[in-house]
Length: 252
Image 1 (cartoon, helix red, strand yellow):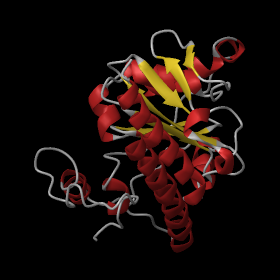
Image 2 (cartoon, one colour):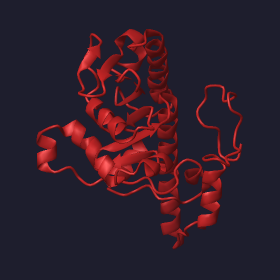
Image 3 (cartoon, rainbow, N blue to C red):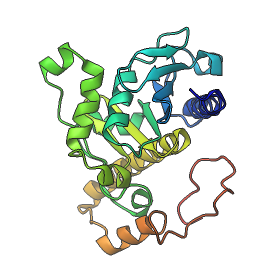
Image 4 (tube, rainbow, N blue to C red):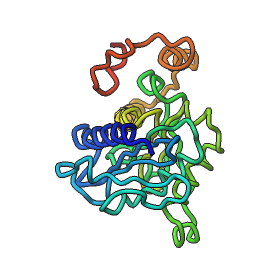
């Protein structure tokens, strides 16, 4: 295992976890971020129940990608560890995973309603609705619950790696959002966007109901916004000059 790389990964994972409360995505300790080192066959994740204020690099837990055993660490890993591991194993392009219980995204998850695409803010990051999974069965809850939570996400995406890249998140029914990205930072930023567009969608749907209409934006507009940030013809932003911040406001 490459210790310098693991040190860098620990630093990235710690920074992403510390941004969860800063972004208002979690109450108490209800959220976690992980990052994977595929060459080493491990991922690094937040320990269970440790407050963000007290979290250090040394507290982070290193877990084997193959079988979920703890490779390094003196604390128990997050209870969501097996969900992260399932997603890493299903989608090789994922480098980081985030799980939160952010208020508006959870509202959609509890209602078993996908977050709809109602405007360009959503389309900048998610090329389609943020989907909601099926409910876990009694058998799935009774044994390997957390890994099965990952399995219902994979099933909802039909195991499609390209779809997972274009829609980097899903709502677990009655539970909450999981998002992912090429890095722990990207996974966290997708969680920030997921919560923001969930809040916007709730307001939009409420206004649409009051006004007696809720129009669907044209597909060509949504596609334009997604492709200007993603894919071979993307031209949004300046590489290396993001300042370590979350995604800029749309239109910036």
